[in-house]
Image (cartoon, rainbow over the protein chains, first blue to last red):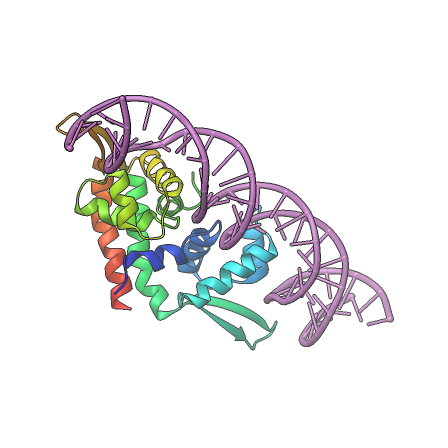
Length: 97
Length: 97
DNA sequence: ACAAGAAGTCAAAAAAACATGACTACACAA
DNA sequence: TTGTGTAGTCATGTTTTTTTGACTTCTTGT
């Protein structure tokens, strides 16, 4: 019995870097240092926090890739992929108006 | 040439009371003191700020109703109504998952 | 005339979000 | 062994958001 069902999703996508990060995640796996370079003006702490919150919201999955240059990847979860359409519609809305 | 088209809309719906307020606006005109009662825990200042920001974002229209007990109403603008579908989908997404 | 409701504003404080810089730990390459 | 890259944490400080409480203005009801 929530006051507003949209609230939690909006909260998990709100924050200075999260929309951009989610958008990049739609295009492919995210990597920490790569994100820092892709988001000019961002910083470790904020990116770190945003990644954790997106993970906590169940939208991203953190996985250690045990390959050649051992690294960490963040990919859209099942739930995150489910958000794809909605996110694209939000983009459409903005572009339309 | 924006980094992320979804960002501005998400920003205008982010804030402690805005999603709930937008939701109420979908159901009908908003009134200041009425909102304060409908949002337990809220306060004048926050509601006032949120109303102004939603108005600035072009989602709500402030109108003085020159009738019986002269008052102010905030109603969804054209743009605000255009957001209706998207907002409902966000709600659906949350309820689904 | 007086009180009460509607729609606020203002200054200040408290809380939350964001940024900075120093530091850690592990892997790999020269 | 020294350096570079990846992926962070930690303490601290700044900025933004949200809350509190006192005050204002206009209109209506008694």
